[in-house]
Amino acid sequence: MHLQGIEKVTLTALDLESARQFYLDWGLSLKEEDANALLFESLNGAQVGVHASTDVQLPKGIEKDPTLREVTWCVSDAAALDHFRTQLSSLSSFEDHAEVIKCKDPSGLSLAIVLSQKKELHLTSALTNSWDQRQRINRPSPIYDKATPIEVGHIVLFVANLAESSAFYQNLLGFTLSDTYPNRGHFLRCTPNGGHHDLFLLQLPNQRVGLNHIAFTVRDLHEVFGGGMHMSRCGWKTELGPGKHPVSSAIFWYFHAPTGALVEYYSDEDELTPEWIAREITPGPTMFAEWAITGGIDGHTRRQIEAQAPSGQFMTDTPKK
Image (cartoon, rainbow, N blue to C red):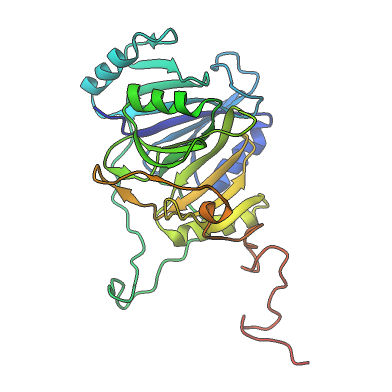
């Protein structure tokens, strides 16, 4: 029995209107709203709930708002839900609400498990023409004016005790170790067969607890670029990107969000099976990003932020001296 991924993330915002505009620009669909909360969905139905930080019905936060308040994981059937009900029932934080079971992880973050309501999708993504495989014949690669994220792909959390937190997710929730930064970080996937990680736990020297980022899967690297440039045109601030992670091979672009920490577009991560052997990797800038653009790409000039735009009709034009 395994979890099937992230069904919902519940976040807080100090300014709901700013958060509303951000996630609409990000490409999510707004499904519900009232004076204190917003509910967004990705293409496959994964949800992002954004609440006013004053909402007393929310689980307690593990750091100062705005931040992540709860992660809802999903299972495929009632038997799997019963399996995790048994697995977690001995925890002092366990709550059984029939169709939803809840507990807290070692950091105090609220976790929920539900039957998945996400939709199966059949999407067309970019084909590539590598030297030995010519997949795209008589057709151009796609261009995206903006992104429409497929799902909530993974979350990254700061934890105070990496060994304790990682053991909790592996032993009680069935996560599999994909790769490690020894004594600093564990990349975990919730199914033996799947993308490189659904969860990354990172222990900092100061033992900070909280959210680092939430990542949204898009179709292909072209949508990472198109989505990032759209967010730039809308005035949202890039943290880093576009770039490429060597550890997971994913193409990424990170933005600052009104709901705390960062959000990420990503695509083309490694696909792993039970035969994969977790690696011990020395962390560092070159392992975080094989290459990356600081400040992002200007959505108007399509050049690095603050770089001089081409002056001619064609981008290859250069003024005569």
